[in-house]
Length: 131
Image 1: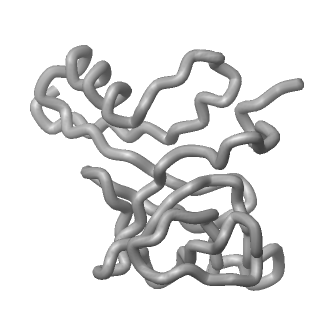
Image 2: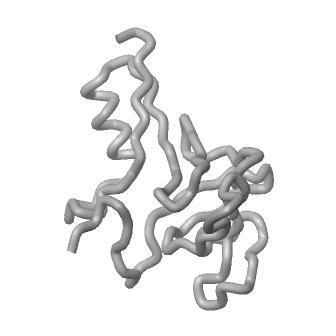
């Protein structure tokens, strides 16, 4: 297992316990020893994903992330400001190309994306949530 890479994809909406990405990575590291622990950010509606081996996700040529004011979905926020994540997926040529999520995040001055969790008081949705 010397070259093992573990990629977590979030999606713990069904589980009522709250756990941070850092806590999850610590638990995975304790189980898998020297494995490299990485993260993936994406959703079923998108053809593209972002990957990270640290706190920030690097944007790629197929997917652009912008941060919007949670109270005004038309207002794009400047770098470093926390807000609602909006995804433009350029790989979705003949389908949905823009999604305004209920995820909270920020973009640093280098264009890297940090996902900070869910916006409070939002409905739980997604492929891992069952009513």
